[in-house]
Length: 196
Image (cartoon, rainbow, N blue to C red):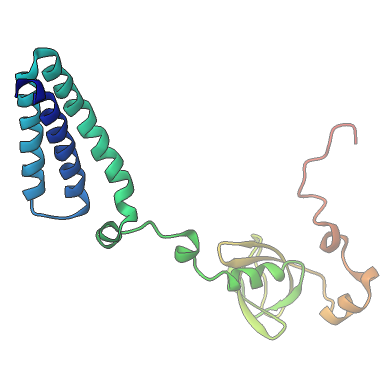
């Protein structure tokens, strides 16, 4: 019988590790953990009954192998049915981002000409294509009814600057009457290059 203590030690160690991993996947109120601990202790005792080297080997396997198996089991636990019910999954970016349709619409207004609906000191509203849009002036006061051009989209508002008196239809019909900065951007926004 003494020559088979190592077999009992290996079987009890495997049973203890298996019960420890099973405790992670099947909630038992600690019953499986108690049985796993008892099996591992029994494996260590059986190992030392076989011999000192076998006992130290089983003890080392229990001390190193147990935590490794538990960590691996915890890594895969969220993918199980119980893990999905217990843990809150991290939401995807499309789940938390607001609808982008308004921002996309406001970005399409860049370069268009509208009319100030009220006095803008610097915030207010403008009318473009019959729609009222929240806007901020570029830093200058804009009178009610003055023509403005959308130059930028920032923080759910459009940024506008006053333009000379012209009708939007004239600008749309004759491309030669359009200001150059509506086609290529404002030439004064960039720093001049050296040698130019």
